[in-house]
Length: 140
Ligand SMILES: [Zn+2]
Image 1 (cartoon, rainbow, N blue to C red):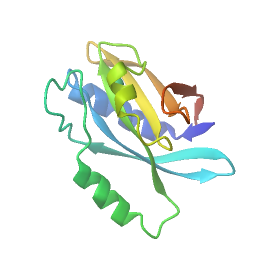
Image 2 (cartoon, helix red, strand yellow):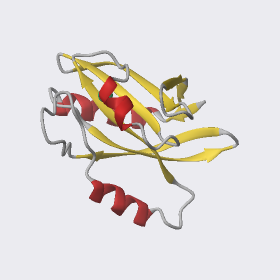
Image 3 (tube, rainbow, N blue to C red):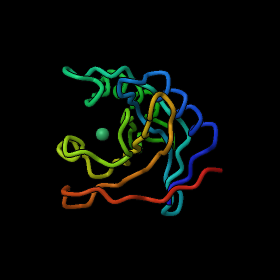
């Protein structure tokens, strides 16, 4: 189970709507607590994908480096990342599956239609690296 604060869901929603019609992306920061994952911070990144950013995303690697450095002595970690699907459902695309290399990371996908977020889903990657598994989350 994943827990995320309402403020973080609102940040995520606002950011996805602001970036529409391009895919927004960024990091999910949080910690593990007795088998549960708690998302505590959203770090937006510019989408630096080369190509059509309405269907592709790439997180700026410098943001990841800076974040890892900042969290070095913290219980918080980069526990995953997020991106949006403009005018598409929050289901992992074949491109997403190709990018699913780090099997320990959570994926959050934000579906945005006509500039309005309609759904956020979260996924883990199967240990085989060949499929996504949806993970329930609660907003508190
Ligand atoms: Zn995607």
